[in-house]
Length: 111
Length: 116
Image 1 (cartoon, helix red, strand yellow):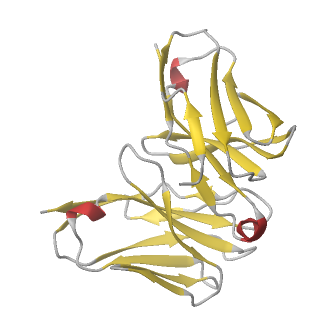
Image 2 (cartoon, one colour):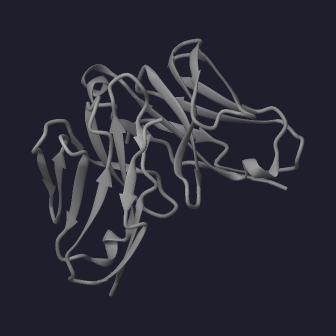
């Protein structure tokens, strides 16, 4: 059974703070690593898909890095805003089975 | 907007009754999935389909069945609903051309089911 771990489980930060969280995944049979943003009462939306070791992706104030050799990815949010409050999911793809999701990191940004 | 519609969006039912949730897509994606969302568990895969009449079990398939008689529709059925099946159910689609190489999914808006 593939195991995808995310930490921390939840996080409270002040508006303007920068923050980051971690996704750990199997380092073997790697095909792709996904980050999704999931706002309360909405559906998950894709943020990034990363496939190569060393990949860095950026979208506005949010960026992600990937290390496939050691099996981890970091998501960074610079200058957090209240609208960044959401659950951030990562998901591991091995290429021949469905995505395996972590349990998510729930971010609350306090104004 | 990935063209995914779930119905019903909200349903309250009683223990022991059958329930069917429908997922309809207009994107011609090959793969369709049903997940459930529960506090502390994130998203857990119930069943998925990789083509018409081709389905497979996910992590939490007990008590659920699925059918896919045409590309655009994927039905999730609870033959005899139990309180433990109270959850939010998400349909997802993926696996068309380049998307198949990364596993990227697009999600519906969710169906909230309450079993009393």
